[in-house]
Image (cartoon, rainbow, N blue to C red; front, side, top):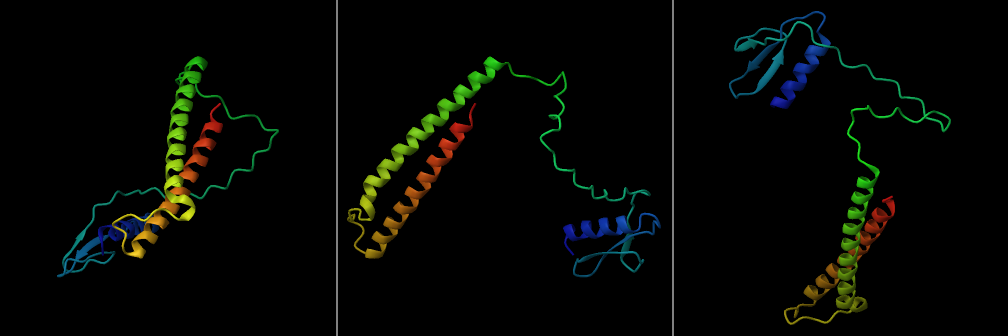
Length: 163
């Protein structure tokens, strides 16, 4: 039994028998395997457990779905740090600038990949005497183009989410 299994078994024993509070023993056999039990056998040691172990938390019923007529959530506490509107606007502008730069670089990368790809017929390189190597490079280019296009879509989505 691994230590994770031992801990899980211990928790199970503790949760199941917290009211009766029978002792729990840790037994180790000749091969070093550990076992938790409620019977004292040769080579077993009693575990020192707290008398009262809290019962597992009851499953809470799901909260009813919010309707549009309900009020907005409570405002944050007065001592909660707030960012000034102008400071937030500056942060958003910085973020927009960084994302626009990433978008520009990703579009440049996509253009370079498409130029190299040449509609699925890129030039063969000197080290590609084996046709399988050429096909592998073409497949890698196609995958890189798709990845770059998805990155561009994600960056545009992220930019549109900035207020």
